[in-house]
Length: 184
View 1: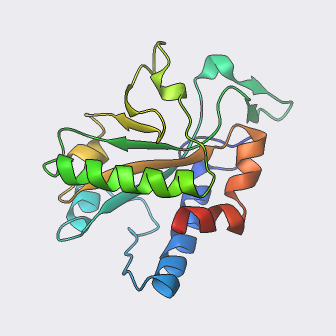
View 2: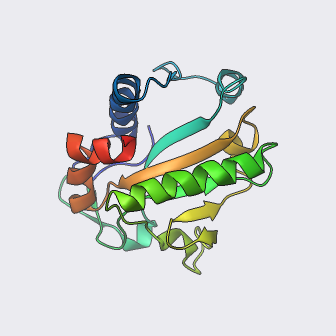
């Protein structure tokens, strides 16, 4: 189910909510056809097959931080102000790396134009992070061995919409206004 939010909500629920919102929003405002993977447990092979003959494979997620930066409340819910903002990842091992890079830049530009801020915590020189930051202003990183990116059969980006262990980010990512900024 991924990370837990500051309210002990599963990341998966945020991912589905954002995906559903974007699917409707993009269809209504752009005419783009958006296909979501099934909302059930599926294998990586099924995910890769779903990317065949697509213009872009976008993997939606919500972020956390390293455990050392997290404090837990009485219920065990994680909380941290260590990081906030969005992140975009691409893989040089994806057969469509150049196209992925172009999509990532275009997406990052649009997010920044909407007033969203990238998170730079994945570039920290610490164990578990230390990712290569391709574009600081747009929050674009390289993560070559992410299975979902390197094995996609289309240009692919992984998008971390916000840091849900950060109570401020968690509240923001749930709002239609924030989701609308992502879809614009």
